[in-house]
Length: 79
Image (cartoon, rainbow, N blue to C red; front, side, top):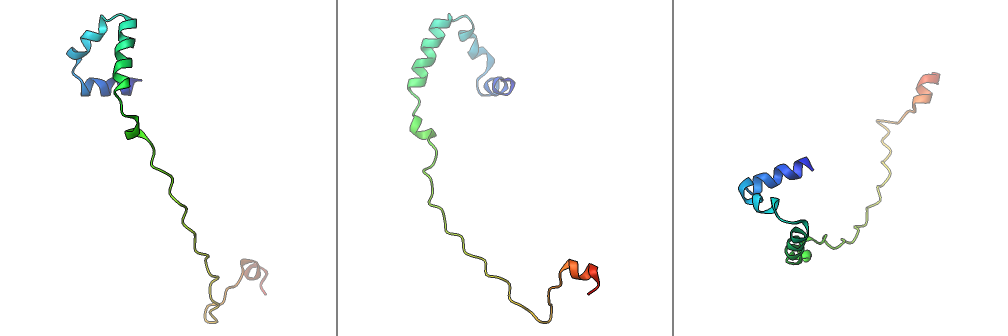
């Protein structure tokens, strides 16, 4: 809430908020409903979901006799 308050004070100068301070709660609620009715909700919709791209299967690495793989277990056992 603190961050929202600070943002409102930056966007709208404090002297413009004074009109709302003395406003009765019911009148303020009605005013906010009028403002909310003017909001175009379509502008805030999420983007439509994208089709998922197919992932390419990774091919197994090619065997290279110059660099043969040796498991850690074989290295530790001394074979």
